Amino acid sequence: MTEAIDISVDFAGLRLANPVFTASGTCGYADELADFIDINQLGGFITKSITAKPRKGNPTPRIVETDAGMLNAIGWANVGLDKFIEEKLPVIEKLSVPVFINVAGETISEYIAVVERLAAEQTIAGFELNISCPNVEKGGINFGTDPEQVKEITSAVKKTCGGKMLMVKLAPAVTDISVIARAAVEAGADALSLINTFTAMVIDIETRRPVLANKTGGLSGPAIKPIAVYLVNKVYNEVAKQRRIPILGMGGIRNASDAIEFIIAGASAVAAGTANFIEPGCAVKIIEGIKKYCISHNITNIKDLVGSLGTG
Ligand SMILES: Cc1cc2nc3c(=O)[nH]c(=O)nc-3n(C[C@H](O)[C@H](O)[C@H](O)COP(=O)(O)O)c2cc1C
Image (cartoon, rainbow, N blue to C red; front, top):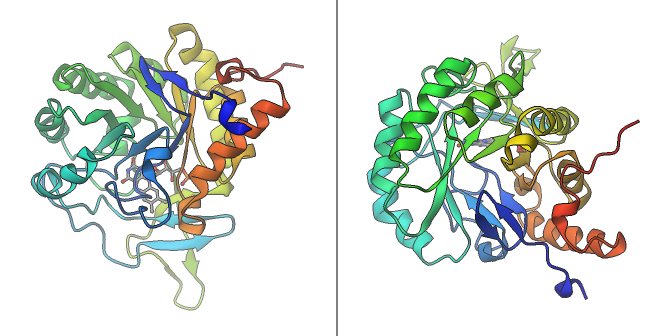
């Protein structure tokens, strides 16, 4: 029955079979969830952050559970561009799902180095620019909190994308997220993804020290969901709607109801992150749940649900 419903979406000119992604950093490079789900059932897949050089990441412990969420301070641990191309790209080449490469770096030239090498790869649908990671000393969020820097990095990367889609991932803890979103769009972003995590701390009261070796980490999971929904709605109303820029909404999504909230708020697509650690197959369940919702609410085209938040 649910097969008859078409929930495909046009995401910045790219046709996605459905609006459900997995979020960067929570599902590896491509095939790590293969024992649990068929990745090709997703609307889109986003790799963990790739940097020009390999990174060990921050010292451990670098994750800790919180009430309704978790903190992570992974610090972009990844194999680096060369090994990614050698070992992971061949796996990605076999997938039919659109794959986005999440790119990070300490300097603009590092971001460019990654994008330049991957721009000609047929198998890659686009890039997600991580300028919102709170867990590194250099780069990351430092690019994503100042509109001038957002413009500079976005336009520099856009020039090297080879026409592939560029999605800019926004940090939530800024004075006005719409100012940052506008800067990204004016500099050439084709899509926006939001939100990344909030800097936070957990303290061990016996040692009176932070639990994470990095002291702070990024808060994710259900605890941040209402803030994420609000920020998606704000960016949709103030920036994305008029300019027809699609939003990939994320932050605490665990099930179809959560995903539908984001879509009503203005997201054209959604991503599940932290929820994958609890239920690795959750993204596929979310797709089915969205279809069921559309049937029971007589929605024939999911696009009618995007930004359909009532007022008053
Ligand atoms: C363990 C972990 C690792 C993450 N790594 C990355 C990353 O490499 N790059 C990135 O842009 N975001 C990363 N994120 C942020 C998520 O992609 C997402 O923006 C955030 O967690 C909010 O969604 P959620 O509440 O569904 O997890 C990471 C999140 C977690 C929990």
